Amino acid sequence: MEAPVINPLERLTSLIYLEERCRTAENHKQLSFIITNETIGLAPYRQALLWNSHTRVVALSGVPVVNPHIPMVQWANAVCQQLVKKNLAAGEVSLEELQEREQNQWNEWLPPHALWLPLPGKNQEQQTVLLLARETPWNEGEILLLQRLAGAYGHAWTALDDRGIWHSGRRYFTRLSKPKIIILLGILVALMLMPVRLSVLAPGELVPVDPFLVRSPLEGVIEKIHVRPNDLVQEGQLLFELDPTTLQSKLEVATKTLTTVEAEYRQAVQQAVWDPKSKA
Image 1 (cartoon, rainbow, N blue to C red):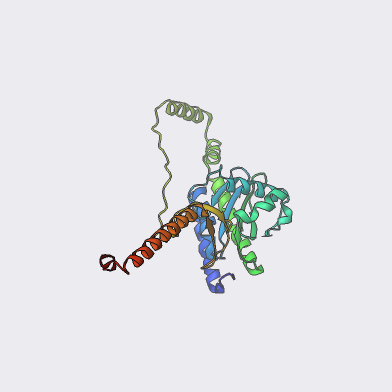
Image 2: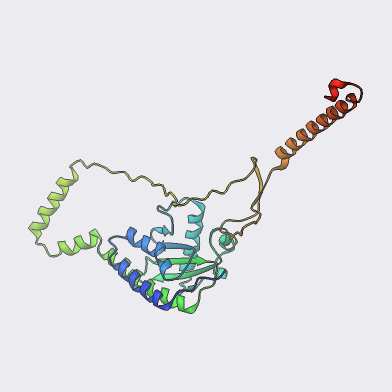
């Protein structure tokens, strides 16, 4: 399967658009969504993963909320931790850089060709990395464009860090006189004593616009699955096998019923030779 060819002018337009999008992001959550879901406009991929050394897996492409307890996210955290320790530059990931356990599970969670894109930032202790994975190798032109885009992403991520409440508050307090600082601290203490209504975030449901259901033509229990997660399948390919026990029992019952009916038919034919009623 070959990656679709993107016109150079379209790539340049996408690069400019994505740089503008990341500059206008209002918070890290919005920026994470842009990084993992809209970068595909510059280069095709099947799975994008944004990882931060402080918060671990920040975002996954196509996933509204990341559950840190699922096996895929835990495996991705281990992979990124191992690669960050090696201080890798931007480029395609080699499985030899990983431990044996993570190597064996790679094909279960991600396509074979993954691109490692560190996002530059001022805080060296807190690193942010974008991992893109697909079935085809990455070419040099794509890596250069994505590396440039990663620089814009890193600049936007750092800018949002600087826009945080504690950083802004510290700069504001350094400009105030001591009496004003005491007054503001008193107001803050008073505000902390006031009751605050809490809000709850509930998970949403993604509904496909044009769903296509794949179902088994027969009832039964699946005995064996012939494909692994993230495998590409073709029309007519064998996906799974059903347990033949139930089908075998139905076949035996149908065979016995057929034998009984055939015996009744032969008996009726013999009687029809001399009995007019049976012949009718």
